[in-house]
Image (cartoon, rainbow, N blue to C red; front, side):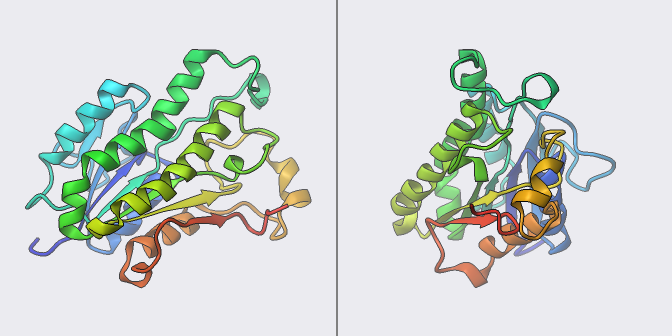
Length: 244
């Protein structure tokens, strides 16, 4: 389609990533995705020309991902990149993995997926994003700015690092016309939640409910739209008022 805009979304096989892919597809964008699992059902982008099955916890796979997806772009332009893929391992019964006992391999896999993948993907597509004066949205977390009851130390630290990287890249890429922002979800109704999240809802969330993946996708849509062209370097919370 002439003039069709293009977005790349990581971790798009379920949850926020999948909802975001559906949102942009409904708006007429071409959606290119990467995930560890195949997209569900008959997603329009679940074909070899617009989906890659890769595990972003492996640095070599991240580099391969950039190389493969660059060949999928039309006219060498990329309008938006959503770094959504993230992993958050839990202990027995959904318990929090603390900083003293989490093994280094788990730390490394978490940082590869949650931090190095956004870094390498954004750097890898700078030229394509610049041609389109595109936008990057990183998915951080409420756990990046506080000790969370269930999110582990490695996860929280990787998300805090990603928030800092967002500010740095916004500064570094502003002259190229690329905007870089982050969204920090609170308790969103996805598979990544601890089984004990219900303990938080009534006590800590003023709106007394979980957020939906569609609500997060709508915020991502806004940040990639013409309505947000003067927003860069921001980390926007979406947490139902869970600020304390």
